[in-house]
Image (cartoon, rainbow over all chains, first blue to last red; front, side):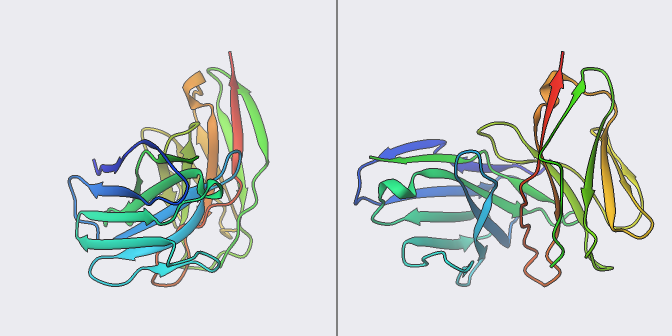
Length: 115
Length: 111
């Protein structure tokens, strides 16, 4: 089945530094990927839609200069949290459209802690 | 875009069927209903999706009412490992294909 690999699974960084999270589709090509953020005991909140070869589309209220998204190939999308602050600490999850019956596969998530 | 309403929490006994309802009264004719579940600190797991007809796979069954305003996810023989948050999602109608998550139902399967 369609597999999405997300790396790293957890990361701790210092305030003011940048962190890159990778999302790879392992056995299919993903022209469209999505990035979500989830705070404890809350639901997933869509941050942006990432399309291969074009600029990401950000949801209202999401700072595009802070959350940089790159989707340079059909199997890789990256999310870079720039100048991270403690309030950016969250669970970040990516997903990709598998293209089969319009299914979506999710990565296992990245737990970001900014200290 | 259609929104969904789900009970905040439910419980059922292990081995029994778990029936999780979802209301999507504003759904449009070409909008799909998706069900995902999330076990603590993991990415959501696909369960099933449908448009108009009832659907069944190895995990669950999806029953959609004739007017499409509500649906029920059925886990036929719940196990302890089915304890999770279950999300009913109506896919956004435009070409973005976004999945917008609601608050979901926290299902607790009791021994």
